[in-house]
Amino acid sequence: MADDRPPADRDQSRLDETAERTARQVRQARHRGGQAGRIRARQWEVTLVISVQAGLAAAIAALLAKNLLGPGSHVFAPAAAVGTIATAIGQRARRTFELLGGVGLGIIIGDTLRLLLGSGPWQTGAVVALAIAAALLVAGKGGPLVGQAGGTAVLIATLAPMERGLELPRIFDALVGGAVGLVVVALLLPINPMRVLDRAAAPIFTILCEQFAELAQAMRERDGDRTLKVLERLRGTDGDLSRLHDALSGAEEVVTIAPARWHRRQQYHRYARSADHLERLLLDTRAMARWSTTALQYDEPIPPELPDAMARLGQAVPVMRSECKAGDDPQRTRRLVEECAELAGRAFASGVGSFGESLVTGLRTAASDLLRAAGSEPDDANRIVRRAAGAGEAEIHPPVRRHLHRARPTRAARARRRAHLAARTVTTVGPASPHGRDRPGERSGQEE
Image (cartoon, rainbow, N blue to C red; front, side):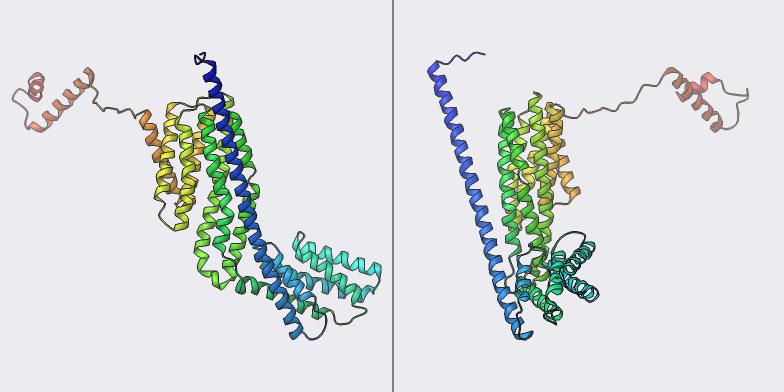
């Protein structure tokens, strides 16, 4: 239909639309800049904590090695302490044992081969090659065990002929350094595991809220390009998920080895289960962005209830986060999820295409995952979503009531019933009449 507005009004409307779109882009750019700044601030905080832990561990390890292990250059004790602190968060205990195992393996292989082959350049190469091969066979992959085995083999093969007694000091240095590193992490400066987890999960919550709203608006406007941008943005969350997994690993290590954080164990396990379902919710959102893009490309119908359900789910994400942090019963989360499922059921009953059906299924799956992230059991979450979706479908297409009625018997059935009743009467009346049997017509008339 042609636009009947004057040209000036049309130009003004286009200018307003352009200005609104520009303002929206500026707000999004500012928000992304603020989010990037917050991520950098969190990284600086983690960097500062690890740096202080490493410096303190190195100082304590050097002091203990000097006073306990006697005179000498006990360089490896602070080096082992720093290696324990600076390794991947959540793997410090395992990496410490790998470090000690690598030192022991390098000493055994280096001393044995040095006694058999002697000292020299090619002997050093052979010792290192065999030490690395043995470490790889033990560990199955590279890591501290392999590196320490090769480094220790080099020291034994090159310095042992000139300086006797390197083996025991190196083992004791490794023990002191690793122990000091673990003590600093567990007792002196343990991190707050829940704070680390909450900060690691914050970008994922933010992305979900933003992209649910963006996807809903794009579906209302039938803008396939915007839904495709949502899909690309959601596909770029692998780094956020990796940081969340690292935070979970680090928090698990802290609540396991730090006595000051043992009271956080139950809270950690609850958060870990929620984080698992949060990751599933992110994957569900990716799938819905892909299905909505394809549905718009195939020009399938998009009932207005479908983007409304998407928006409700996006509103439920920050509500779930705030209720879980406060330890409250997630009543508001359940209410928003029920509204989302009900709208999805109404959209399905209104009529959707094949990709629209997949989108409705994805909404119901995401709603169930959000309830599970809030602490609901899987059966309860599925039942809540199924009941709400069924109620939404019933609003559009009420179930047909089938009135039960008794079918009228046929003439042959009525005749058989009369004969049956007549036979029963003959057997229950008693002695026969003087004329033999009663007349059938009279007996039938009495029963009827």
